[in-house]
Length: 575
Image 1: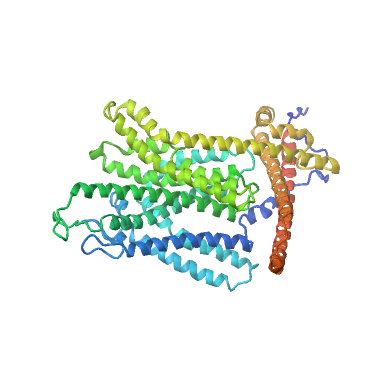
Image 2: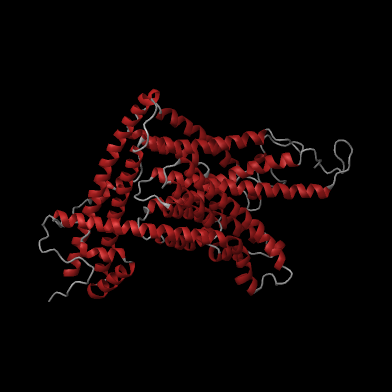
């Protein structure tokens, strides 16, 4: 006798060939429609992505120019300070941990310049190709990889030098990335998109920060020490005595300005990564949660690479300051894994996600700027205040003891980050509540549409309460596992996720329709601009028709996949 199906799971279909339960095919429509078209290929998206990359390269070339024209304060200074080396440092090969803080691998520097040349050449080819040519899409992403991907060479030099440390940081970072993914609850980002965000932070964002800041340090140092004799004499060129206390003060000021520059570049690079991912990938929901999750994933990637070099560095310097590589691992990969760069990247992404929900340019600029200012200020305050707090408690607590290692040092490091972490949690909570409300509307509308049509749909009215309540969904999974085994529970889980993807797609379509309606309600342009606006509108209408067709195909594929999974669950439950 067949056991009664669990409440909340679909019942086995009486006729597997009925229209309401299509039989599974060898190649699911989901794979063709969604997996095969993960990246966008329209001309507007490509143009915007290239514009962002050009801005990054333009700023880098400006940094190069400023470094070349800086005042020289030491004899025989090279044209670029990145070519200067401490005595005894190797001229070839991977730099050692300590030296890599002050110089960059020459191979990586020339690789970036080569990538810029290749990227420019590819763009010259793209402009000669028809806008709708799929080859233009491939060349566009290749140009982006050449322009920005070459900065990953700086990170790869560091990671390749310490493979064991890389492996040690993988489990904790993977667990943190899984928690970030699970925080979405609805409207999940594609897994390749999340992994790309992590890779952006670990490779490109960290490499951009290293490349830009090494140049900036030399430039700032040149202007700060201009007019100061650093050759070892006690007088300057005019015979005046040199105040070495003043010289040391200048050194600290140089470090302070460089820290501000590094924090600014890091958060701007995080913002560039979030913007490019939103532009490049096809995803169903763009809101504060989307930006927050992408920014946090990018920050986690940055923390991954930063942890590797910090652990190795403090292992070398442990005889001087008492810190050890194990302590750095505990701080960066355990106690503050969700702090520092993860929090600040989340703030940047949240600002971009909020800006994507408004049509007013002034509000967009204000939201993005607010996120960047908060993240940059938080990064600088974290470095400064944590050092200041550490100095206050140094005379009252034994350094290196159990209490210091497990409680006091992590608390000092995390204390300046608490306000920013609180803001991120509040933004996440608000965004999830908005998503739940939108999901409830979309799920109910999808079920009502299927019931009105009188055919089996991806979501039935009986399943709506279970989809909208995480506790009921979990209870249904546990009950199915107990009554029908793990295979049925896994199939039910896949089916529920497919149903929520259908709801997310419907939400996206409703938002797009509302935005198009609001855009059409704007005032008409002046007479002398009507011709240009009309041509632009025709192009936009053509793209909108194409996007609407692709959206319909995606919706049909998602519904077909959900119904196929319904059949699988019903077969396992009823067997």
